[in-house]
Length: 177
Image (cartoon, rainbow, N blue to C red; front, top):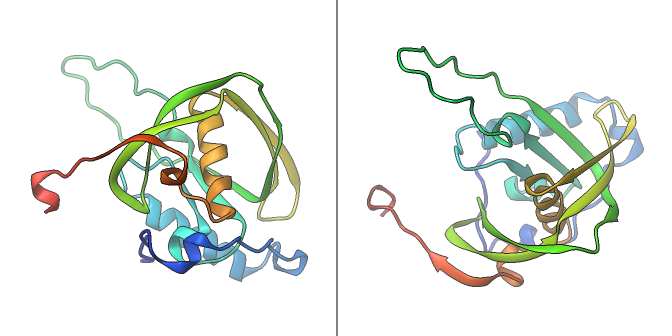
């Protein structure tokens, strides 16, 4: 499994390259996306991952959509069915619209372990991207989804949330030491 690289790794500070036209629909692109999903899956706090975070310098990010919605209410005696992961893959994404209104949001990053802070992000954002087969789609979102789009596209531009976050705190759990 691909390892999630940490702050200080040069690829995180580079501008990722667009996925070339001839890569769409290839086993090579499918493998990159599979590697990204496998790296994100065990990260219970992770909702999305950009390709540079597994040292692949392409403009791709994946979102675990099932982690972006609150779980159903707990019912006593009910057996919790683990939900199958639901992914959305964004290739060569660009933000086409964003709201004027901005909000302060709590943020963290799998490539800056145990550090959290407050970012000032657009409240709503619309992204145009391509799927693995090369088709184009557009997604809009507010709140958490808008934050994800901005955070992941920052990664593709060599920007980490700590570059513009305020009130940074380091939280280390006993089992992580």
